[in-house]
Image (cartoon, rainbow, N blue to C red; front, top):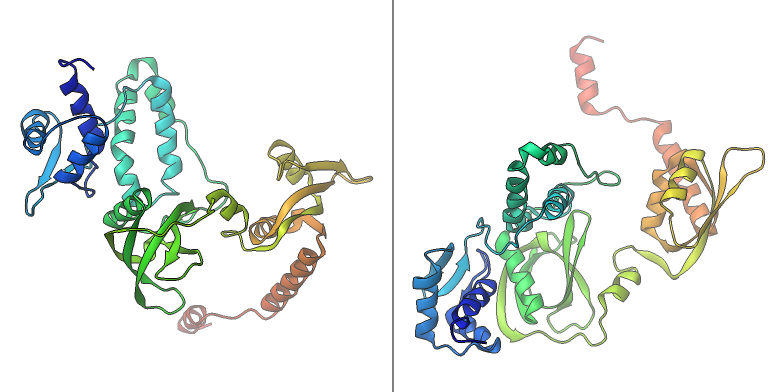
Length: 352
């Protein structure tokens, strides 16, 4: 690397290492990571780079309330984005509407500079119609999407840092079953975003069994200097496939056999339920017989329940029996409808 180019590459490396606020990085840590990248520089030169060379052109924030100083980038700054082209801008525009129903607001806030740059790029192309095209395209979730669970920005930052740097995390965690917060020392293993919630996978305290911690139930988080315990043999894909988030009734797949209506058959022909699937016309009917290899889990069963009278399940038998029990419970529930207090009160007040 030539001498005249070395400062430029060092500045670029520095900007890549500084996290967005509320994330921060201390001067000694920044210095160590620069050296890991091959840049030999002392502390005084680093601070001169940050204050004199970069702070004038980039939104670098310095927390000098304690030593060592801690550095971050303005959360709303558009720094770090590659030059956008039309396809990338449109892709980011679509990604924004899709992720709005999946990610916590604090995570979306960190992506907003990227989305804003895409919108600005498209808005600047009014003459060629691309901005109008973007305003006419939307993404819709499959089914009813719940609003993302609220999550504190600082907690997201602490969790991600602990996971990536393999460090322990001390949290106050609200137990859904007990209704109170407990202090836990978590050893992170993975992170999963599912529907409208995000989950940290890890072990707590001295226990060895992996658990899932909903990020929105973490009331406070402190990143510790101690290294996290290694989870030997942990593979996040195998963990998920094993039914960690799907409440599997069996580790093996089963053959789903069911009669489906023409509308559902059309849907499954275009977007199959599984890679091993076939549909056969039923003689004397416009319905079709579905055969598909599926996991024996609650998520697939809930999908079946959502089809209501558009599907008739023949196998597996455990689902046939469970569907029958649910039908009986629903029949009993609606046989004697309960009149709510509000309806009763409004009826009395109206004189009926």
